[in-house]
Image (cartoon, rainbow, N blue to C red):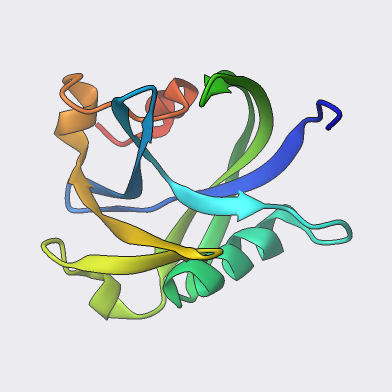
Length: 141
């Protein structure tokens, strides 16, 4: 397979000192990431973000606001990867998604994990790792 840059849209959603994330592992290390996913040909990045949230957790977004574009070059499962991230701030339409102690089923293809609220301080103090790290500067402090 040819190496390529993958365009993705990620949603930074904050609420009461928490960020909405999913958890992953790479080389045995736990990391956290904003939700979102690939941008399809002919689709705007904002539309991709809205579609991904609907597909993954059945959540509609509102107040989608462009933040920045980030390069993310990294190694995942021993293979080099490169993403161009369109980062957005957004809010949930349905207030039930703001329950800080609840987890939400996250469907990605044939795999189901969880999305949840993580205290921002755990990221800022280094207790938990947010990827890509270039997103750190956009968190409310």
